[in-house]
Length: 185
Image (tube, rainbow, N blue to C red; front, side):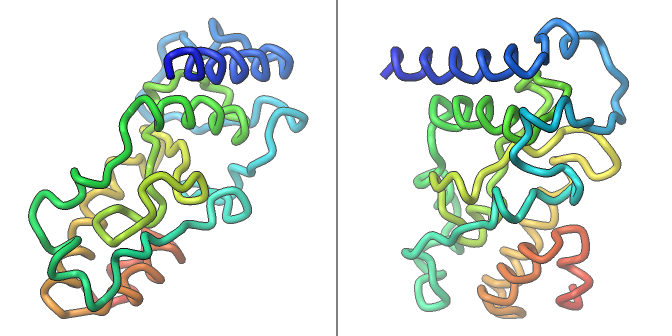
């Protein structure tokens, strides 16, 4: 397993070097509020145009089939349930490195990104599906941390039977920054 991880990191580093993105340039101290910048069109296969949202062609989202409106009482509405399905960091860190290159971020420091579930685990998003994971910047006007409270409020609304699971998933997938107002929460 460690060999596969090393190969994945080495492959991602090779892509970055080939694209002309040196790790040293990204390591420099930077202000808290930065804007991700494309490092080169050849390296980026995913667009940053919709930030703070992911590129829907790269990260369309995916649901966990075990989580439905009928199963919320024994899945997402059970305290601690997400910990039982959360993928290990060995998986998400390797994926994050590859996806940082795919998104063409100039800042290539993995610590500056949260490998985020587009459809959150709290709403029954697919835990390990790369279509549901993306490197969300921890900086900018709407950093990754801002989405966490929206996810929690949506889960509480679903578990409190104020909105359906499908409505919450649709709202957060359309635009997490407006999901609460879209649902009247």
